[in-house]
Length: 431
RNA sequence: UCCCGAGUAGCUCAGCUGGUAGAGCAGGUGACUGUUAAUCACCGGGUCGGGGGUUCGAGUCCCUCCUCGGGAGCCA
Picture 1: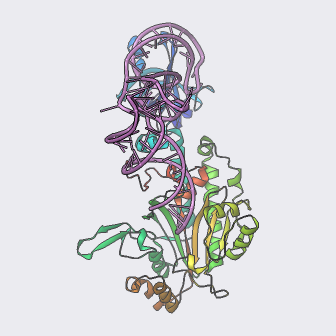
Picture 2: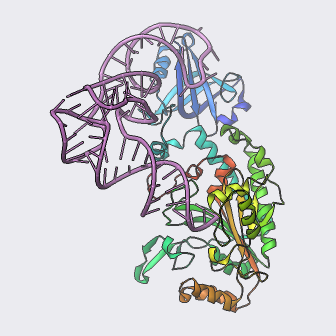
Picture 3: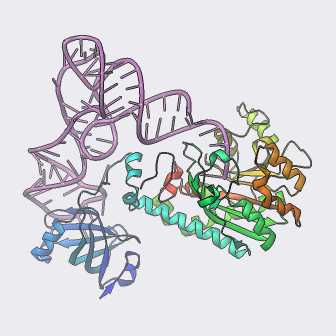
């Protein structure tokens, strides 16, 4: 007799099989009893008729509690009334892992309680659906770059003092060398690798000790960062729109069942096709003023501004050439307007806001050094990074896409903490 | 860090101008032959976040601390 997974039951209609999994719910009406079982691949309903089974089996069923691990044996039958479309007429049932007082009941719970029980909450249908969409997004990202000859370069997580703002770094003791910091970005290393391999990307966890408390921030999040030799800022935006369109398209195409489970209306996602509209920062400020925002030139776009602007378009929008003061030191000065830099953000629609920050990098040694000094950073720490401008400097561009923000947008989540299995936030380090 | 809001049964919440605590679900027992968060009946379940104060009397009013949630700034 075959031992099968729930997703494979369709191939075994009429046959007797064994399925292993966990109890979702049980229902009994005295003469007939139902058991919903999950195994990670889907749900199946088991049915027991009182007069067709022996007393011992009936008793074992009566003792089942939520999340008990068990192995059931029965005949597979297609039945539209059952969740999943198939049923098992049970002939045997063996408890392999008892479970008493499972904390997450089929009723409502508060977010705080749920995140304290995140290790158990992951088993719920909704969380399983999100995990599968995330998995698809990650695979789509890797496939996209693989197909375009990008080389994956894994950048270090432990770094010396290098990155963006020192105040946002997590630090730890590092032998006799003083402090090490958890990486906030792989970009600077990615630039070095781009000079070796041409097109590269890194993809891993990044860490920001910002004391942010919003639906868009985690202290540990995953970021994918391509870096391309000889791409200018326009090439960079073209890569971004192709990339985002591909990733969203893959999720819609292959994870329709999960998105339905999440009650995600996919029509806004189906409109995500390159090219994306582009608006300069200066034009965006003017447009925002006509839309009622009181933003002034020189200030960064706030969350409300992003939402307001994104609402004007039916797909993600690029805002490019920001004032240099609000952007990082490595962005290349705009030769046509030195008040600005050749960087762009990509804003997702439906209020999700910034999912990408990208730029053409400053490739001029003297300008880069001047920017490092002007921002109060230690030029000593950036010695190796400056070397990239001393030995065959080159036009290059790249960007960073936040994985959890992207998954939250695709899934239609109200907070990105659900987009990762074990979110890290200011007030949450467990489980 | 700042601005709001909330901590009452295992969970989600109600509890009026102060008078010593309530529901649904979960759990237990029983009934029911097709249930979909099954339904129905009954039962058990509480240091009202901690500390201090006002009062004859505080879940309720005041002070303080803690925890959590939402938002801002910053960013992906």
